[in-house]
Image (cartoon, rainbow, N blue to C red; front, side, top):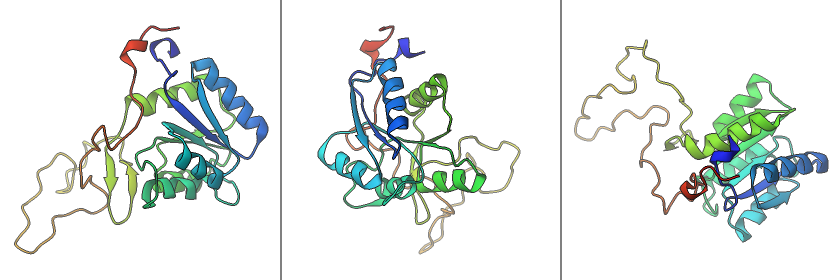
Length: 204
């Protein structure tokens, strides 16, 4: 799969308190073709890296101190000082309880990967955040990639996606229960997310 991608010009930031885990992730990333890779030991140092350098993708652990991966993701998505709210965030964590996975999703994590990882599953996540970029949602309750990956064709309620909504009466706010995109997808200038490099297809 990596032969169809050119990761050389995509910068990667890895945030994990474990030196062993950082070394493992860096080794795998280099084997895929990444050349620009930064390291951080926690969310706070990761944010500092992002303020000083351009980052295209971040891979972060969940539990970290003083700033964990959940809060790091929230700050990336919502802070007025965030360098790029649309940044793809891949969380790699040993804490795979349903509550933790939901927490990661609700903070705006793009992809979640359980430890221990394999070379193939990590590569699949990198390809996913490049090829399958979901609409970015801004609402009172959530900021991040659309959490709804699939349409439920069996649901016939009036709020089912794809069903035209009734026009709002004068002075009435249209329905927006939990995060339909309010501003559309970010423009290429706004969303500095990595794209598949056409020139790199079939590159070794």
